[in-house]
Length: 151
Image 1 (cartoon, rainbow, N blue to C red):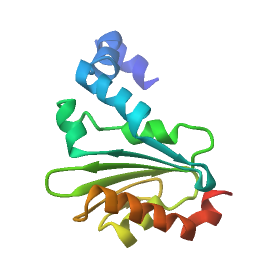
Image 2 (image 1 turned 90 degrees about the vertical axis):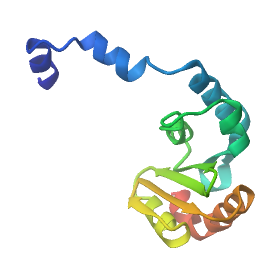
Image 3 (image 1 turned 120 degrees about the vertical axis):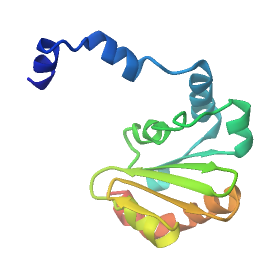
Image 4 (image 1 turned 135 degrees about the vertical axis):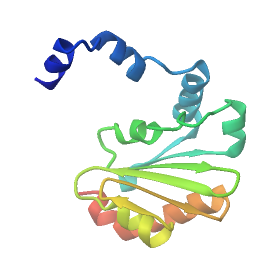
């Protein structure tokens, strides 16, 4: 009903859709394709998926602010995945974005291990360690949460 009210008030619904969903740059789409084809790692024993991106990848695809937004959700969209991580190497630190399904506490992992926090199913954090070290640390944490991840 709200959408109908907006249209009645003069909102141009097709234009809003274009601005929200059909405004990606070619670089962003190529970057997303690279992430899914080359950076996605699935850990079926933990119902977890990781997409890890290096600073070199960001430069290669000329990634701009916002281009990495939502990439983690592609990993979470797989039926068996309960926890998804997007780990990206920035110039000053490594950042993590975690998304989870159901009761899994993504925020607990970020708060406890990666100087962050957030909500149960959407959280973020960071580390001063290298990309490889952060990936390894994240993987080493998973056995602690295995019961929740395989429910």
